[in-house]
Length: 480
Ligand code: DUC
Ligand code: ZN
Ligand code: ZN
Ligand code: ZN
Image (cartoon, rainbow, N blue to C red):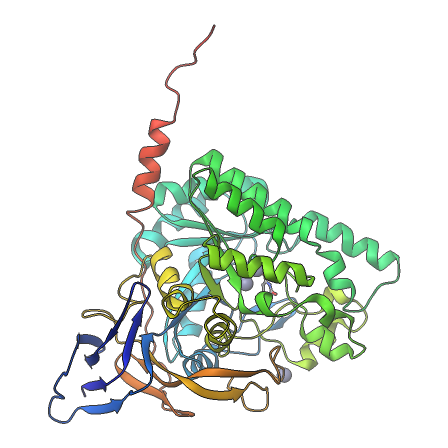
């Protein structure tokens, strides 16, 4: 059935226009003034509202097996919560265990994700290295539409990628036209600090940020960026949380490197005082890595986003309930790492970004949707309200307020890091594949309706990077 959105204002990253939007068969058919409703079409009056591309959250972990448990949010509940918050696509992570075949892990995650109610895609983590990984990366890129590979520089004795793995995998990414991405924390230092804190008898959640100070992130960010520079490959840093990492990205970009940065709504909004609460459950609920930082980092991150050093916002949505967090009662390093937010991100970014004047509405669309779609090569299929794009749309009511709470959210977790926060500006309708899946507080989703979205290997920026690398490779050693 066709769907016509009338009388709204369309907001894209690069334009604002008064226009109606006509959708059918999952696509946007037309964007323009005074469109006629085809016979039988559903019509939504969006007067006074904004019609924007649905959010793309490029960083989630649904039902992730992690730290001895499994994240409480599955692909059904997680994508449903995303739709309730205006996010119409997630890019989740396949994380093979050390020595596990990447393709085997990918198959497992694809099966889990088949219950999704919104569209989704996958980054694949490279956690170990041998020649077979080279071959599997090629198959993933060329046959499965995976164009980004993740590297955890932390989590020693688990999924941490050694320098050797980083060098080999980054090199392979360049050959394949795939984006390397990193979780930048020095896992050796984290391990050392965790042991030292344990010796000092610090066992509670207050030890978590002490074991992962911002220098540890700065070192890893710098190392990954220098590897990318030396190997001549673009790089994307996930969840940039501190001034040190931001400074490295900023410097690299000023020196002409193609380095991209992502920031989480949580890191923009919360500080490390949460870990010093007397309430153990409350403090543990905030344990995620990298941790929330002292306040001065938040304003630096906002400026990084406003100034373009950071291009995307995400959540690292990785839910653990209070009973799961309790696994670390005697040792903070055993608290499963992760916090939620896939439902809240767009509202937080609007309220703290647009309502404060930090972001224009167009910039809001850029950092919540279009930039991620561009960087991960699914633009303008995603990230744009235009003829021919997927009909993944959020209709935004800037006048409506709501108070975020675990009591009312759709996320399958018993805690919300934004608990009690009242935001103004909320999705009134979310449209996925041309169907209204959320309207005024009610969900209309169908299990399995979400589609796996293939992301082709990059022509650009890799073609440009190749030309640049060739032009800057010495062909002979000059001697004097
Ligand atoms: N950080 C988290 O907090 N959870 C999942 C993985 C990660 O890197
Ligand atoms: Zn991470
Ligand atoms: Zn993550
Ligand atoms: Zn639970």
